[in-house]
Image 1 (tube, one colour):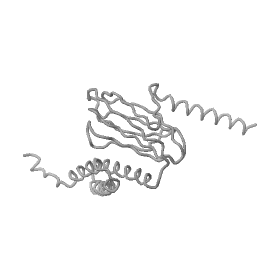
Image 2 (tube, one colour):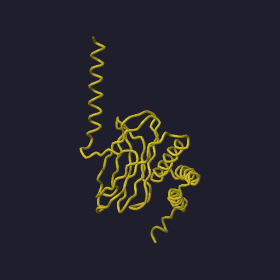
Image 3 (cartoon, one colour):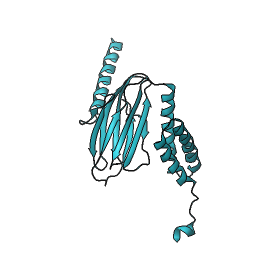
Length: 205
């Protein structure tokens, strides 16, 4: 009897958790494999997309920014961050986020504007077709993670060498993966990091 009660309570909590996840935002849209959408955005709005992934599915979205700088975040059903991306490309260019689902489930993709004072812009979001993950896809996901870690380290005092090492690794990987756009972005960040710091006298002049 007690075990039945526990199962009942657990089932109710699971249902409530899924409902809360699905109703995070009443304007949440479903993003299907192969689907492309065009959206307008202003300031730091957040657009949410619900995606269902199968076990070992390779999930990838590409966003073309058109006068708006966005950051991407993929959350699992518990609200934990599974992947992020925010390339240093300003209000134009492409943002790509990739992820391999270890088990099937529902995820939430958030697209957020980076500047609260930004005027209205737009972006197109394109989810790739369903694809079972390969070893190459898993490597791609890891390279994106290293790239993001390298960018984050740039803004942390004392992490300059770590940032350079991660971005150098990512740069060579982008070249091998035939991603010239990401390779160029990474190269530009490395050039900034390798510039000798200005002395206090130079700063005052």
